[in-house]
Length: 382
Image (tube, rainbow, N blue to C red; front, top):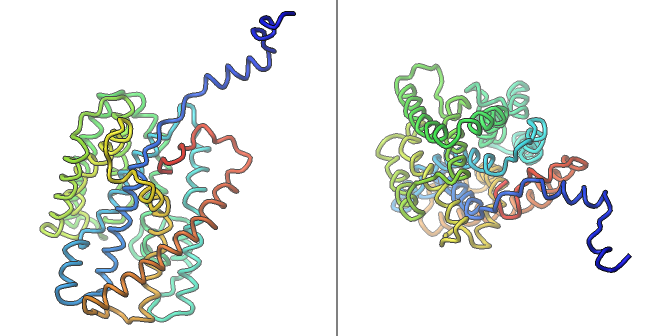
């Protein structure tokens, strides 16, 4: 056998392996700007809670209220972003059980640890409320947002995880439906989702329900579906929205309109359009190599810590009431110092949660499972 013949002949097993490898769908490109934007949204929520804890008085308090009074809309951003990222990273043939297992591995470990910390705080510190057995169980199972008396038990920010758990349960069906209708159907779904947000805000204004709907998972579903729909348009190369700068301007304008309207669910109507434009615009900027404020290494790293930061920061602020008091209303200098300390502690704990709980627990729960095709590439939001 000649050298040329040896080079052209391949054992059948190797050939089959190469064919199987080449037939696998290529992973979607990384979208680091979306990871950086996650950090911005988490920072808005942190600023909102600093404002609610009244660290500042006088002019400082008015500035913080102006800057972060609408910070709750950061959660709306997370809902739209979640639908977009899950759609972007989904692969054809990815089964629902595998998807749900990855989602559980993604959010449950940090949720359980922060819930345990909150319970320990309730047992040992002042100014903390002790949940009932039913409230605690509902929180652990991520169903507490369905009933208002349960919605802020243990770690209060986990109400949004209960919404996400509902979204995850529906995602395989929603993604399948939008995958079948094509670009025109995705455009229609985008418009209907925006109209649904307006309709829910109108229902909320009429007080038809016995409880506010800000944290009701079914009421927040249109924001998640909106993210799925615009992601489909980007995937199909049919997105025709404005560029990153114009989209950012619309999002910022909507954000600062919120104090002129309300602080309840209706605030979502001010920002949802801007968010629905900003997220795909940032994705397109990454795909085309256009300039982006959120693609830098530090921003991406902070974005990777954003989930743990979001889950732990309010516990830090609550524990801080035992040191600085309840609504202390400091002057500017002292308020900045206390805020910086709370931020530093929250960021340090988020890093600790990320490296000791979030990452290791996720790898442990997914060990032995072949989820490689559905994992997002390095730098893409999970």
